[in-house]
Image (cartoon, helix red, strand yellow):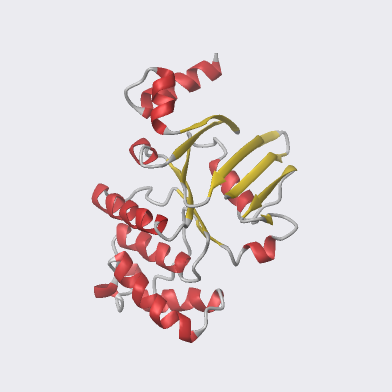
Length: 242
């Protein structure tokens, strides 16, 4: 099943084209990674796919919902964790999760078991009474993920979720993402870490608003005769610039 589909999706800001005719398909239960330098169009793509922003032209569907015409009903099926996820530092871990459960309209009967599961799942159970502001960077990201998952979304959008997080916490975070695949959650993730891109089923390389490549990490490396994704991406971007 195709979970995410775009057709010539374009977004302009005045004379700047932030996203240029994006055509993309992402399958159910896949981790898809979007990689590119700052200003490549990754965050713009996320905002368009989550219905936060309208395109200048083109169309997009997420879980069979049109991102513009069905934006409200789309929100029930997805979760979006932005680069600066809105945690409330003066609230505890439990209070933050309960707040987002209220926002998403999760019933008290359902949330009781779900919160316990998410706390164990994310390793936050021993810290459930700790204020969010007292958590480490890695723990804050795990709490953000728990809040995003409280309404059991079908598609999870993560905008550079481990940016600035230590390597051990990054590894733990990705372990949690792999567990989500067992529940057939589709994960659409942007990252600036190419070792993380290697963990994705497929990777899309963006540069100046254009999707330059979309393949498995191994296929991209083979095409470029490169040992690493970093080496391959440098070759592709140089080729594009020339």
